[in-house]
Length: 230
Ligand code: ZN
Image (cartoon, rainbow, N blue to C red):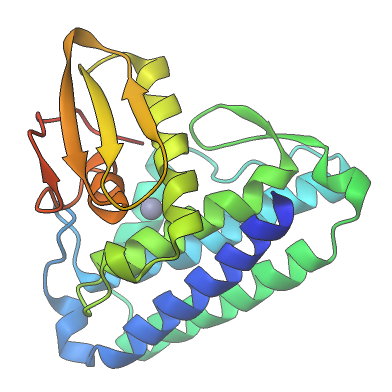
């Protein structure tokens, strides 16, 4: 598990940095698929996320409570402020913070990974969840950058873990329609518990992951609209 998550975090970071490198500076001022966010907002968010996750590794290593962000307002203010920085500075911030997080994760001992920390959503989790949280961020946001990375480009093991994760979170929230998901190109099926008779959604694993993550719906059939995730 942890080995997979560390590998996906590293792989996702490479994918994100590669996608960022292909985008010229002027593209970073243009909107992304994420509501209200330009490319620069996305870079500031991904860099700030690395620093927030470094805080969790510090918490795990020292036992001293070190939250990801001071507050949700501070998090949003930092993204907005970051989005006004020059492109070159933002690129460097993304690259350096990603490297620093990798170093911080490499420095954790087996006992540190078991330490309980709290996510920005208020969930208490073992620190071993940090690499997964980072993998999810960099992989999905690599697609959001609009540089040509698609869900179909992401590793299938990661996509299956992502579908498991989102199905569990959506089922726990229970604020959307009930859905059963069947992949045409991958073993397994999933059920999101929710309102009404389950709608049978069929698609590729990548299509199902994109749909559940609230991104593209062109990889699935019979897909009802879902509430926000995360
Ligand atoms: Zn994010």
